[in-house]
Structures are given as structure tokens and as C-alpha cells.
Amino acid sequence: MSATLTRAIDARQAVRQAVLVEPRRLELRDVAPPRPGRGEVLIEVRCALSCGTDLKAFRRGHPLWPMPTPFGHEFSGVVAQVGAGVTTFKPGDEVMAAPTAPCGECFYCGRGQENLCADAVGRMVLGAYADLLLLPAHVVARNTFIKPPQVPFEEAALLEPLSCVVHAQAMAAPQSHETVLIIGAGAFGLLHLLVARAAAVREIAVLGRGARRLKWAADLGADQVFDAQDAGAVGKVADLNGGFGPDLVIECTGQLDAWADAFARVRRGGRVVFFGGCPPGTALSIDTRRMHYDNLTLLAPFHYRPRDVRVAYELLIARKLGAGAVINAHRRLGELDEVFAMLERGEALKCAVIP
Ligand SMILES: [Zn+2]
Ligand SMILES: [Zn+2]
Image (cartoon, rainbow, N blue to C red; front, side, top):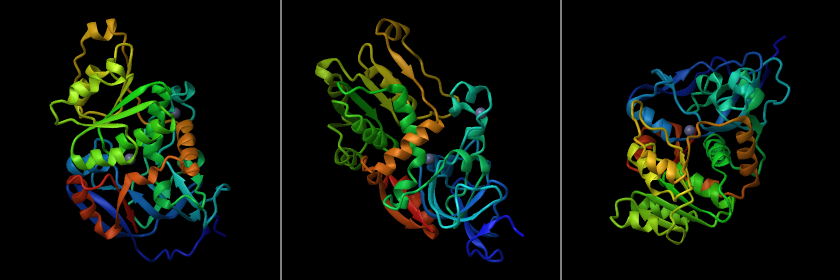
């Protein structure tokens, strides 16, 4: 007797799996369907979302994803099979999940900093651009959830990026009387905009590049948008908050010059969130006088903890953020090359890839 509960998947029939073979070379390979082991869950992917990290890896590789690597890490789907010992999910359940989970036992987990657990980043689920995806036991146990029927699969697939944003804003704790400046009008910048708006902060400004992105930011509810290429942008940021400057600056580009800009633009006594990770080997030079005498608080949140995933899940199932608006392109799995071409041209924030 098999301990694996099975929905109709023919073990002999190949399924499609996108593999990043080397930078700029994606292959859609036929592979044998994976079988879930103890504690594991196999899902039929219904939606995978493109992510800025995917685009970075596509362009220049990723230190944690040696190539060739299965590709894609934001997803939702339907349970196809469950391994022995799985009692919380059954075939046919619609699910959403974060692609990592902490061990719950190490030094960092013991201190509530599960985002720093070696398992949290080292054992990421990769391969969401595929027909089927195997969720490992630690992800099934801690960061997999039932998707309510009213949440579209593509919105459910936002669980991972939204968890990162929730974690960052939990650290930054924007207040209702504050003015927030978001630097970067990509998908992460705009998710920050939506979460800050849900926190009812007084004013949100977005500093970004390009008319198309700034229009998206305005459409999603930014009170002001500034074009970083406009010579007057610095003055407009300084004018925020009655001329004191923003209380909180959230940097979402992962570019060193934007980090420096975030440090320079925040008001005295304000907080900076360095959200976007910069390329390895970069260093930020800090004016210590400004840091000290202007009493700045610098925060650099990384990744997410299970409690952030839970909050992100609640936000998504409540459907009050309008988070689906950051997904503004749709393609089939066979069109993955076009997805990345489109992302490179800046024509989409996030693309839903449907098998
Ligand atoms: Zn992502
Ligand atoms: Zn741990």
C-alpha cells in the first residue's frame, strides 16, 4: 500500500520544468513527475509570478542558485499528491505558500529572527515555472496555507514578496501622521506603497524612474510621484512634510546610489529602510555627523519570518490591498523567454505565468 494520496498524475508522463541553464538561457525541459516523500506535498502550479530576483538571476546568475537551476519561486496551485504523514492538506486543496521556512530550532529561530535561519534562505523552493512543484516538509509544516476560493491564484502567488514587505514595515512601523518616501517604483516599491496605504499613513511619495512606472505608482494611490531623472526631484522631496522631509524613507532599488540618496533625503530624527539588497562588494559611506546629530535610524530588513507570512496571508485573503494590481502581464509557460524580454524592457511589473 502506498502512503501517498494521489490525484490523476501519470508517473510515466513527462511534465514541463523551466531550467535556467546559464545567464540568459532558459530551457523548458520534460521531466518525470516528482513523487512526494514523507511530509512533502506535490502541487499542480496554477500561477507562478516573475520576480526582480528572477530577472537578476536571468541577467547575471545568483550566488545561491548554481546553474543549471529549476527556476521560479512565487507560486500558488492545487494539491496533486501528499506524502506520508501529511494530514493538513489533501489532493484538490487550493494552496499558497512561501518558498522557504525556518528550522525553528537554531540560534536565530530561538531569538525570533527566523529570517536569518540557514534553512530560511538555503533551502528555497525553486522550480515554480513548471507544471508541477514539490513542496518540502519544512515548507509544508510552517509556510503553506489553504487558498480561499475568493482569492485568485495570481494574487495568492504574491505571498512571498508581500511577506518581505510586511517584515520590513513591521520593523519600520510607519505611523498615521507620517510622510513616507518610497525610492523605486518597481513591484516591491509598489507593494510597499499598498501596505503603507493600508496602514493609513498620512502621505506617500514615490521617487522612481520613467513615466510608465510613475503612472503605475500614481494609479496605485501614491499621493505624489517624482521622477528621479528630473533635476527638481531633490527639492520636491525636501519640501515634503512641510519642508522637514520624509519621516520614513524606504529604498527599494538595490542600487548603491539610491541607498546614499535614502540616507540623504530622510528628515532629522527619521528612519531609513534599506530594503533592496545591493550587488556583492558594494560599500556605503556614511556621514557620521549626520548619522549622529540628526539622530537617524537605519534599518536593513532581510527576508521574512513566519509571523510576517501569516500577516501577508491575512492581508491577501482580506483582499483590501488591491495587491493584484502589481501583476500587469500574463503569459503561458511556453512564453517564458518573452516574459523576461518584457521585464528587461520594463514593460511589466510582475508577470503571471500560467502553465
Ligand atoms: Zn520573489
Ligand atoms: Zn533556524
